[in-house]
Amino acid sequence: SPRQEAFVTAVEERLRALGLNPRTIGRNAWSADAPLHAVTDLMKKCDGAVVLALERFHFPEGVERRDSSREGGLTDICMPTAWNQIEATMAYSRGLPLPVVVDENVRGDGLLEKGHDSYVQDLPIDPTSLNTPAFMGILESWRSQLGQHRQDERHVAPAPDVSNMTLAELMGSLRP
Picture 1 (cartoon, rainbow, N blue to C red):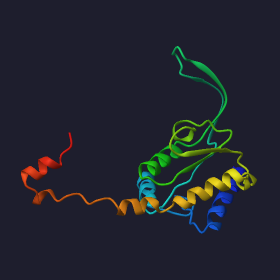
Picture 2 (cartoon, rainbow, N blue to C red):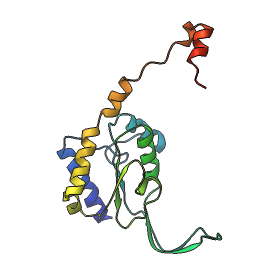
Picture 3 (cartoon, helix red, strand yellow):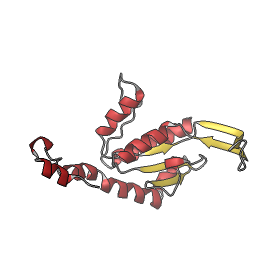
Picture 4 (cartoon, helix red, strand yellow):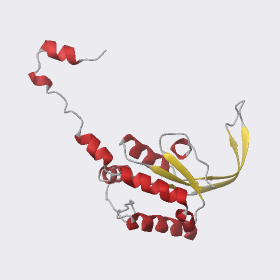
């Protein structure tokens, strides 16, 4: 929506103001590959990720856990694209610093809900919400972590060359 576009543009401008180069498949990065391959390749080149979970689906009514003892009615439910979960999981598994910004009207499930390893911040989808001390503090904290995973990767000991190991050395290197 125009409101969402204004918010995304404001986030991109804030990142650029910090000297960063935000990249999004289909927005300012393109690939002839299938979307999952394109996202994977782009994420390999990134030092961090930001997930913006905006409303994609709206359900005035629904049922949760249908036909179970915990069945319940739902009203006025907003859900983001499934790609938010995919991209958050990919960034998390790569060890990338990952703040998650969720439209305050969107239902946060999985990596979009609070209480997991990534910081999840519910915000009104309005560019002025990016000026709060909380958002600016989280963004600065995230920025300070960028590139850390690349340094961590460089400090990992190389795998031993098993072709030159004796049987005793090979057996001794195994863990129970």
